[in-house]
Amino acid sequence: MVGNIPKKVFTLDEVKPGEKCVQICLVLKDVPGALAKAARFLADAGVNIKTGSTFFLPEEYPNAGIWSSFVDFSRAEKSPKEVFEELKRLDVVLDARLEEPNPAPFDSIHFPVLHATTRAVILPIGMFWALWDGFERILQPSGLAAVLYNAGKEIGEHAAKRLNEMFRIEGKELIQALAQAGKATGWGITEVNSISMKRHRAKIIVKECFEAAAWRKKPYNVCHWTRGYLAGYMSTVFRKSVEANETKCIARGDSYCEFEIR
Image (cartoon, helix red, strand yellow):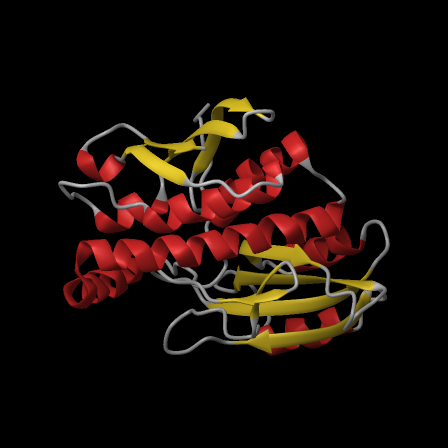
């Protein structure tokens, strides 16, 4: 079994030759078996479910869940609209949307994109490189490093305080949440190598750091935003202002990025 299982963001489908790609979004009653009933109906109609996601929007639909999926109608006997009309009549379906994505199979039913309850924007990692490379030409490496570090520190402090408020966690539990959030959002695999709550020190390793991956190869350390984020986050954990220094960096050829907090 592989060590990490990548998660493909549900924004763009891959259509194979001969497939008839359609996107369906259902608002389902929040009852056991609702999703299974809808999926069984599609399977009986010869519709192949390709990829999708389920989530809740409690403010808009307090007693319902959302299921959104790309499906393939190439083997179905009925048209997408015919199946869709029958699907809407299921007793577990409260509302439904159908989209035949042309010319490209983008997930165009949903907007905005949300990270938990906050609006988010998905950027391919190459865009970070293009942005930072352009800024570095103007600010020089040292100037960009200061800007990214300071911004990262403010965001890291805010993120830790927000997690503390939402889940009533602090100390080592708050550090565990840091590692969970890093993997969930694609920033990297965060591991705490050592920590001293009394001395307000820690050594944190970030594997597959997105910032180093975006910069590719450099003769100097590049993870200034990550370094600042960790400093801000750990300042909240320690309840004392701390700084972070990057001692190893993937962009320089190291196998992982390492940060000393003190």
